[in-house]
Image (cartoon, rainbow over all chains, first blue to last red):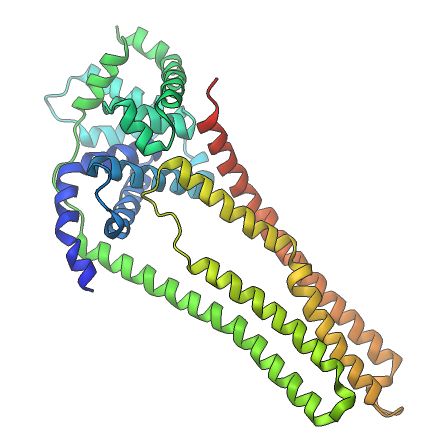
Length: 176
Length: 205
């Protein structure tokens, strides 16, 4: 298994730097803590499997987003029946509570919680776009990840943001 | 509140740091999956191809044992070889490098869709490339046997022929129904999901 040893250290290094991507994608596409953990594990497995084919054309973070989002889209399709039985956002507060630190303001935590709930309510692709946009990726990078051109990204992102804003309308009024 | 506020909250969320992945467990899972897949592919490749080879060898032996009057067995052998050819072609397709999980989302979805449509077509046409040639070969074999049978032998009994015909038709129907069921229960729902996803990506209005 020399190939496995060859990519062991870059894998560890990338996980150290970009672990947040795996977690955010998992939280956005899965709801219960066990599903979030399952999806994270699956994404890491796909990263491990795909790493030997990484040729360096894309930035590591772009490549990681691609692998994680492809995994999430496939994973969710396989578990959609199971997820339907779970009330949207039912376990989200527990996931968020695990992530919370004393320094985090309650309002901010609530908003983040509502943000995840709204993201879960978006169609699959809008969810991916919103996640990439919230992470501050440029249109060019989003285009590289999704395979759309920059104009298409712009249009699709505007539509996704509008949907998210509608879903969050009541929430933000409440928090303000 | 606007987009920048959401973005700020999003970026401030607490995330686990460091590579806390259990690499040993990950490698074990990968190895288990790889071994399982390799074993499945090996069994599948060999059972199909060797089943065809065994049948062709048996038909060749049968033809040799009855002499020149068994010439229709050549047609039966060709039909089985044709089925083996389709299996071989499909195995080669499966082994070709496919788009990995690191492909752009749209390209990956389109590749998955193309593969799924191909599988669906194969299952829906199972009559043409599998059931009909196999049924043809079996009927040729049985026909040769009946032609050679003595008048008092069971193979000439109408009841035997009726029973054989019914069982054979039932078997063919069952094989066809299983394939239809796979299309209905597994392929079509997945195809619909992927198509919906693709539409979602490409809808720009």
